[in-house]
Image (cartoon, rainbow over all chains, first blue to last red; front, side):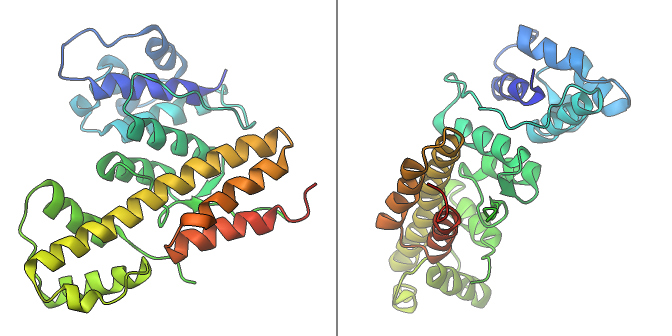
Amino acid sequence: MSWRRHLAPLLVAVAFAGCSSGAHSSGSQRDLYAQATCVDSETCCIQRNPGNPSACGLTAAEAAAIMAAGVGAAGTHGAEMEDHKDDARLPEWKQRCIRNWNACADGRFTGPCTDCLRRCEGQQDWPLDMCRPAKPKR
Amino acid sequence: MNTPNWSSFRDLARRVLREDAPLTLTGDTRALMLRTAEEVAIPDAATALNTSAGALALLREIERRIAEGSNRLTDALNLMWKLQQQGDFDSARQQMRDVLAVEVVPYYRELAMEQLDGMADEP
């Protein structure tokens, strides 16, 4: 199972953080937390505050990247490219940001993927000047 | 073509268009807008900067070209990669041709052309 498939639920939870409290622990999100390794204060803080990365001084993108790295370190991160599934609960621009972040994580874009996700969340479109499509192999 | 850096322009556009900050045409701001206008293929940008309304309209148009072009190209790229995985290179190539048929921003056109050229040897 790909760790990246769990990113969208995490971002959904973050997107709706503040609407209510204590209702963010979806099954998929718990899966992500369970898979990630609580190896330092940041990952442990994110796990203790599901859906509320600001409690750890982090943005959604930073929390997602840290948790994804934790899962990768735990050995569940496959090297294969996988089809990303959009989450229809998210606005179109956010689906696009996450879709492109997944493609970036797969190596289809080159650049600082998480910085590009963060900027995409702010300007609502993928910054192709920062993360451009990888040159095709000939 | 060098890769553009649109971060400063996007920050300016966000402040003015979303946060209602005034568009103050300092020398640096004028230079930024003129340079970015050229990068998105808008002619006569200097004329637009002669009035406040013209400057604001120019800011909006540059922002629109960057954002809409990004959405168009990244959507096409994601579909292209999916089609490539399915072995349907004719349809994958068509995704980039469709972008090239309407895209005016040179950097985006270059990216689309690069992908199209990369499929030249595919069936």
